[in-house]
Image 1: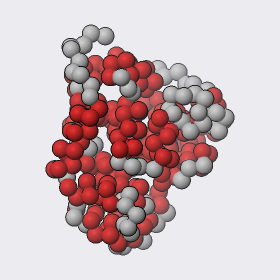
Image 2 (image 1 turned 60 degrees about the vertical axis):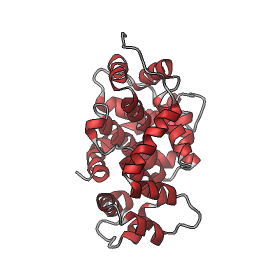
Image 3 (image 1 turned 90 degrees about the horizontal axis):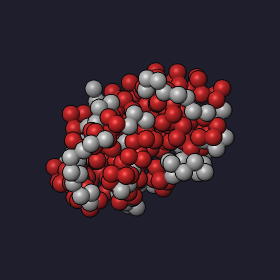
Image 4 (image 1 turned 30 degrees about the horizontal axis):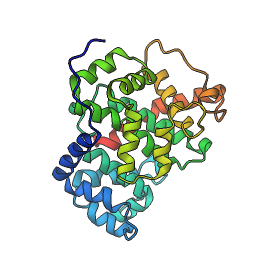
Length: 271
């Protein structure tokens, strides 16, 4: 792969860019901060959220979706915050804060992959002793590092993606070029914002085949690869997940993810 001179990768510089975005989306920044504060309750968080109209609409739609079993019964924003949980509200605010809701500033197929990961993670979560709502957030945010690399070094990173058709291959190439993979960068960003370890650790352990913690996300990437990548050679799911999933269990899950991903995309982006 031939690339132009790659800019010096500086993690602090990447985070400075996020801070500049935060200045343009102050309500989203307040939500990200407030959702982790010990003295924040659902009423307080709903009051802050009400200042961001578009995000309020997305949270209300998600609370009334099939993911939470309410289907139209959530009538107030405070109730919606209680139903989806603080981590989910925080995740949706992070999506807005980092411009992940602007597809013109993202790698191609970013949300096709992201919503596939999220739908798969929510479906598989009980097999990994994880709450489906937290797993949904993990899937939604898993590609954040890829977006940050794209913002930081668009031309060269586009070449990295084009030259490496598999997700694992891309992460190896990212690590070679930037000193860390997009998954590790995502974990660093979420640690900075004090997201729960249940979301951070699977990202950190994604490429550690001996880690059960990374198994959920490895399974999700395998499902999305089967759905979106022409010529993908299916990998046995048992070794990827440390035996948590059997191959015969995967087919109906893939069918469900295919059906759910586009609806989830509309919920997350408000399309």
